[in-house]
Length: 128
Image (cartoon, rainbow, N blue to C red):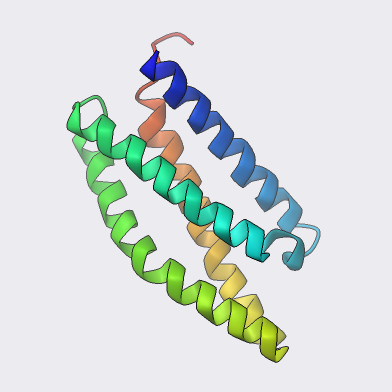
């Protein structure tokens, strides 16, 4: 039962984030919005909870746990700062700074998706 919940969450994460990244190819402003920024933060918390549990149970490889730990520390520092910069740039109409912040958000989203698939994929049963 726990594996099915984790698999469903991982699939939802991948669909959510890859859909957002697909929208980014049409226009940056479609990907980054207050709602998508909030969603990325919520996804990070959800994935982190699941990865932490998988690492505690030793069902996720130690190297993957270590990579996620490093990423998590980076995310916790970069995400709130980047969101603040994005909001300030948007309010000020500074599109160049907004674009730079969006690039950072896009990279964080991509890296979270990649690590989530790697970590949570380890929890999937063999052959499925």
